[in-house]
Amino acid sequence: MNHAEAQKMLHRCGQDHVLACWDSLDKAGRKALLGQIASIEPENVARCAAALAAGAQIPDSSKGKAPKVAELKGAKLRAAIAAGEKELDEGRVGVILVAGGQGSRLGFDGPKGCYPIGPITDAPLFYFHARKVLARTVRHGAPVPLYIMTSEANNADTVRCFEEHGYFGLDPDDVFFFVQGMWPGMDKDGKIILDSPGHVFMSPDGHGGLLAALKRSGALADMKKRGIRSLFFFQVDNPLVEVADPAFIGYHVTEKSEYTLKLCEKRDPFEKVGVPMKFGGGYRMVEYTEMTPEQCRRKGAGGKLYFRYGSPAIHVFDREFLEREADKDMPIHLAFKKIPFLGDDGRTVKPQEPNGYKFEKFIFDILPNAKKAAFLAFEQSEEFSPVKNAEGADSPATCKADMQAKWRRWMKAAGIGYAGPVEIDPAYALDAEELKASGICLNAE
Ligand code: UTP
Image (cartoon, rainbow, N blue to C red; front, side):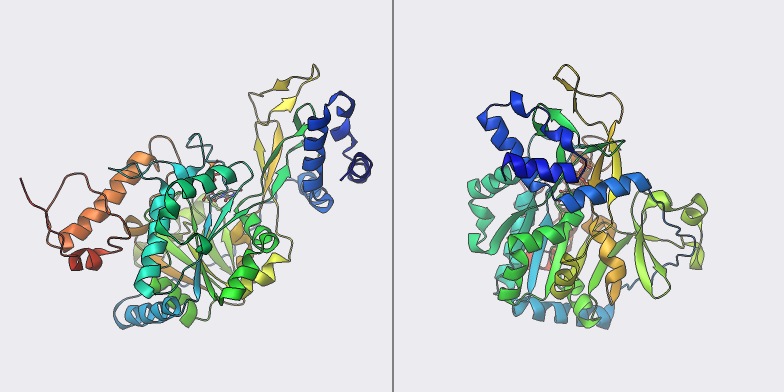
């Protein structure tokens, strides 16, 4: 894109001010600015401005009903596991890891996936995810390709982390990094914010940016070429997750679902998690901010919460469903944030209060479009302990304690009584049975 093309495009979008500093920029500054402008899609500017003008829309969830959530036991569980293992054995399963977030609450300098979470080894979050994928690959004798979404801000560091650790034992040909989109921030009047002379403030377009990024990067085409049918989706901050577990994959396949969600019981009625609800024949994820206190407290059968289950963002998608959705526009969500901006004196101002909007897409917004959706319950203590905050709840301290508690349960099942620090490489044992079968024993001093 050259200056004239950029000028024309910005003029059409009512954003002429973005080029106001042009004359004061050197050659490199001009090139960088043109690069940023070229990455901005005019339709998205118009959609973001329209979303801003419409204001935050709170959809009515008062008619929502609790979905039917399966709790697999006995023969049903065994059948789901067998179906999932067949998918894995035949190489029809891929894994999507979204790791493009900014991790602002954790405040870690680097990609969140590089955060040292190993209780003994300080191994990064990526280690636990990648070693679980490796364990599945070895166990089922077929590749399980890993698709990792990064952002422009953390892609290079993420790739470096994998390179420095020898891809954690994975075949690099089966690891596919792709970069999500960035959207410009806007002020209250819908004007794109510059945060320094000739530099547009941009932020990742949310985990819903996955669909467009999968298509743009060729990841969707790669999945098709490999004959992948089901995609296990998870977030970078949860090292307890059971990556591509056969029961979940098998349940998804046997239900002929396009979008299957793992759900866990809410820890309290007001827990900040999305709750899927049924509206007529389809489903929609209702954010906790949309629920009334009465809805949150409502009791159902057996005195349990009616909206008992929340979503920790552990999903299985049909590849064909993702392909279908990748071409559609997704709803845009607004977040009012403190955004650095260019002051009148040409310096960057860091505001004390929110002053502008970031725009995001959420992956669960495609739930209503699934021809068939299914829901599977799981035990939170077994599979979900996210690293969100630096301290307190959902922090590295709580997560490390939960990881170790899970491993100690495995050790107990294997007949090993031990209360000290523990860390188990997922490629050594992926579950209690595997640990037991490994014949490990501890020599008490
Ligand atoms: P969160 O909503 O927890 O956001 O992301 P975050 O950016 O990691 O952390 P905060 O809110 O700034 O503290 C949930 C998952 O979605 C991914 C994150 O990497 C994480 O795995 N994500 C989020 C993206 O991949 N891209 C985004 O634009 C946003």
